[in-house]
Image (cartoon, rainbow, N blue to C red):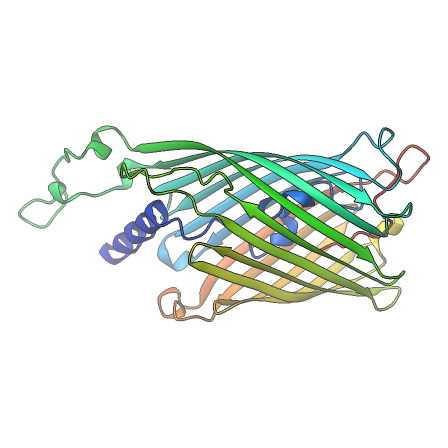
Length: 344
């Protein structure tokens, strides 16, 4: 128990002071507003709702737990040029560290405009902007201080530390992010997109220790995907995301196969997904998904392969997602960005 408390305290302290990395998902492709504002409205449909949940390192007493809900869609289609798309969206995220000792809450609003270079929308360039209100807090009831230690080695005394007497610490800040995405449809069977984004452009000051020099470091991300339709019932997507924040960086790369007739044909038949991703120097991530009537359920598991596997017993992160896509069949008033946007 003492070992777990020590690990939890270390995790919370590191997160509260170093700001090494933002919360992230293995299934980042179904949490698009968390990686690139330009992906707002980037879908083959009218609107979508997404929920993600991740629990990491279960063997260390709920070391990390992250939940995100987002909603985005396209608007004013009759007011903008054919092939263009204006997207708006919002996202709420709660990230808990060390069994809730440290909690990060975010609420973001984003918009993106996708400009088509042709009437069919085969090639488009999108620019997105996102504003975020963030709150970071420490639960003082989960903290243990030296002055609580009695002469018998037990924590029975009352602490006089300000964090304990004030029932914790809380800090709020505003932030902004920008992003871009370029999409190309090579032919009826192949398409791709590449994107880049920058978060924490304002370098907001954020510290519990009174050091005004500590800021949230800039996060740069590069993401992309290539999708090929191998047959009428099978397609393959190659995808990747690379992120750098301060001295931390990571890449998630992999392939996901789709089995079943494309949902874009409005055919109400089940579609199955199976694939595997790899987080560099960290974990192998198998992924399974099922889509039916415009709802996709996804499940993935991070099997830890780094040196941390000794502490985690190979248990990385369990992750689940639900995506609902609202589609209105194309008509004279609604012009889609293209008939075949990448799924991942």
